[in-house]
Image (cartoon, rainbow, N blue to C red; front, top):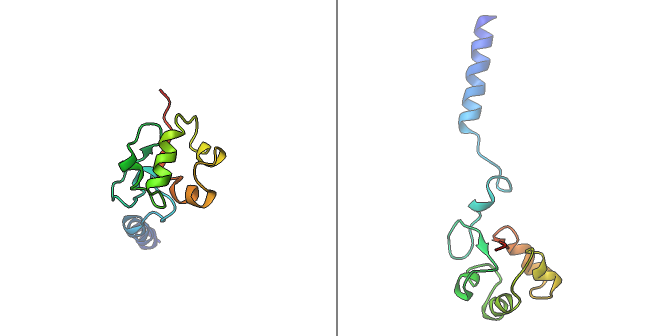
Amino acid sequence: MRILQTLSILILGVVFAFAQPSPKGGLKNSVRHKGGAAELIDINSASVDKLRTLPGIGEAYSDKIVKGRPYRAKTELVQKNIIPQATYDKIKDLVIAKQK
């Protein structure tokens, strides 16, 4: 009986030691974008060049994002027709809208 308990604990230890977080879980800040950085981009203060590192955001959308400032929430990018929903879905986990 004691051997089974010890073996069970050992197996659980190995499972936890090699467990990896799921790709959809984990920290929001660990999401990577075109630029390779693992940080959230503030749509209220980021430069046009920084915004262009986001997937689906080029010159036109980055200019629109800057001209539409300030944003109370990142969802306003779609609500104000700054970017389409499909593009927002690509960047929603990569951006924030900080308030001053």
